[in-house]
Image (tube, rainbow, N blue to C red; front, top):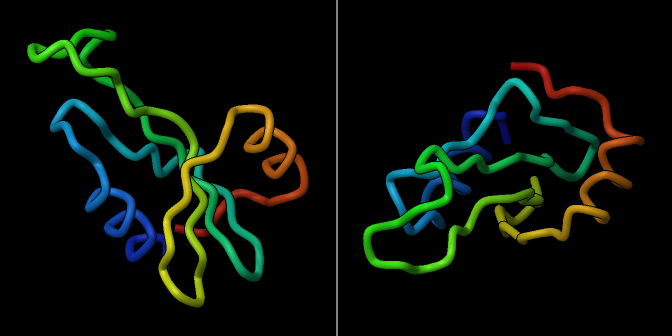
Length: 85
């Protein structure tokens, strides 16, 4: 799986056009990509729904996308090098 594949998988889970995946901060190890979803709406949505930004972990083997807590993502990021674009 490539970084582009992982970004596409995460984008498919996003529920707002105001959310973007930041490729520059992507991290990678042998089995996962760690991606960050950023909110470009400045914290407001027209429908008042919560913003679904934050870290996502993508399993390279099966394509599963999991939303992580910030502390979990920080811990993983410390041991994962930046992804190669």
